[in-house]
Image (cartoon, rainbow, N blue to C red):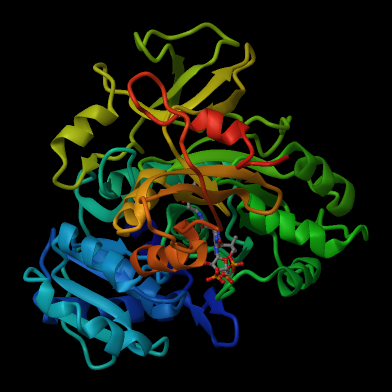
Length: 498
Ligand code: MCA
């Protein structure tokens, strides 16, 4: 299991640097192990038991990581939450998950404390700073979970019809996926990862951080991605691996401003969480002398498909199944496999695929085909030589800066405003963000809301990245005979110029 591999590194190379947070002291594997053990003792002292949900809404800092490792170590379920969630949204996650313990940023204590009495299942909240080292806690720890089916983490994803749902990721899922990535990407103990992603998602937490720790490698942790300093660090020669979303790669490319900067000393630069535009793929080759490795994953599975470390990295393609992963393209209506080159739904099977959604048996059943394949909701085809290319989405989803935004969630927030009669939220193409969230709103008769007021209303309810960047008032929305808004028509119309 992943935790056993990490424990072995901690024993065998206690003095090697595991993590180095920018502006802080380097943390060795031995220190990481000791701090995680103190965090585990803290959790036990709080009465946390296997299966309990421990929620964390923290900035990118060491205590987040030690808490994450400790929660998994004692068999409890770690629930990382985006610090951008406003209290209203946070309340939903804590309530739905039935979190027993909530660890949050001391800087937000006053704002969040008001929430706590509304959450009966929540027994304790604990506010900490980035310097928290769980001092004072001690005592014997139980052995780490042995059962691959045991849940390690819970990650919320949204849906087209439902409120966000918690995907249950087991220790076996994490282990299968990290082993596959280790093999496919040739992770090495002497790798040095420049870590610039948030750590409350699969990309930053599992693919990047677990990837480095599983290899016994070192990660330099930037609290936040900023193109200029990140590019300087990449140029310094100190790093061998970098992972980003296309928006980050676009900003790095723009930062170079046409100068040729050779980054080919990095042995691996990956792109994921959203489609890598062709011009950026070629731009990177020209400017940085690097061929980005594009891969495809999902919260429910971790990584599924990847271009190769050695061999052709095909522009526009997400590559082939990782070791141990099965992928197929089926006709959506019949779920029968389609021949090479034909577009259908991508489905996935393997030991890395999640167990289901928390307390959502219907949603869990709907996520899988009758013969047990995960329905990804992504459309694509497989070429005769096994490379997969994605061609759109069967579900109503926007990806902005590598973050998923579900239009129904934004529409629900807008509809809660008394001046909104109807609305539709779509993604319009955007060079920097991939897509930008745009809303078309029909006001109620006699109401004259301003776009700014509606966006502000939305931001009280949802994280800012989900809220419309642009909002236009319209008299009608294009609808089919059943009254369902035709979003393809909206996307093709004046709302999405260019
Ligand atoms: C920030 N803002 C955004 C986004 N991020 N708006 C739309 N989409 C976004 N993704 C807004 C903020 O609300 C704020 O708005 C303004 O931009 C500046 O905020 P700031 O925090 O400074 O933004 P940034 O640092 O420039 O962030 C851009 C970013 C970040 C670095 C690209 O979004 C990011 O780290 N994205 C990566 C997301 C990721 O890890 N995805 C993986 C999940 P205002 O000023 O108006 O308040 S998917 C996954 O894990 C799957 C499994 C996979 O395959 O990888």
